[in-house]
Length: 369
Image (cartoon, one colour):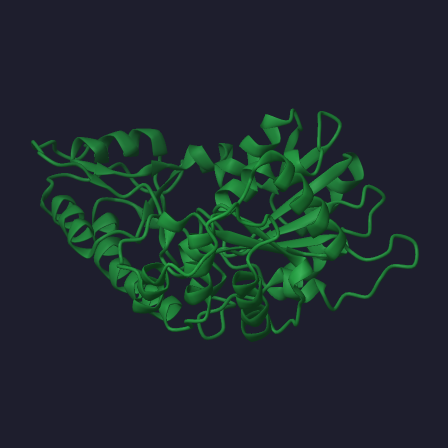
């Protein structure tokens, strides 16, 4: 028996990981001050922004970097979608992504005609590196959609694959790094694959591992409206990316960079966001479990829930006025799952939980057949 349908006037959207909290006083003050140049912003970033990223890297990643390693981007999603293009990838270059992955990884590869292969673990990825000319490896930890955090051993094993003949760029998507709860996290921070690779010695044959770390104030500070993030990589790769971005007009706005600099100097917001997600999880998870779903993910800003058919479950929930994302959107292995965002307003999530609690019947058993 499915969930009973009852008329709902306003659908509750639990699909997007869009923040609901107001901007911090520091960010509001930076925007109100209007202290930024009115001309075209530099593709390499305003000094106030790159300095803030360097200081952030020292505090959070434990790595001292220089400004010539920073690449400002108009939100991490833009960087994910354009990276293969900016690197000059084409149909002969393979992009490796996790078997469950943010859809934009595959979309960015498809935009340049690059084939995609999906890997389940470091051993599987190592085999794929033997079989394919892999140009880019995306590593997501904490992961979207599952919130899983990779242990340092896995991050080291993946980094070692940079010493292969195709010399792939290993792109660590660490946009959720500081809002990570659960296994392998320490004081709310996940292990950084990018930071770990900086201590990896050069290989005599292949040279240094080519790595990139990607970060976002949308997730760290709940500032999706600013559309600003940053990548950190080696100076040569950063210079090439900045040059290409400048030529194509991919510039991060000056007001956004000034506000983001203020946000990065504030280390209190990530803890507030983690607390919000924990409180939301305590409301939402029992309601979904009562409706027949099973918790199948880690701990963070999403619920990753198992069910017999994600597409059908998505529709049954939509009939209740609760909108979620079917797991198939993240790859074929997501067919038996749904993803629920915990980042929205508390009252909206509470209403969604109330609708689930009050619905008669349950979804089919949550385990896969």
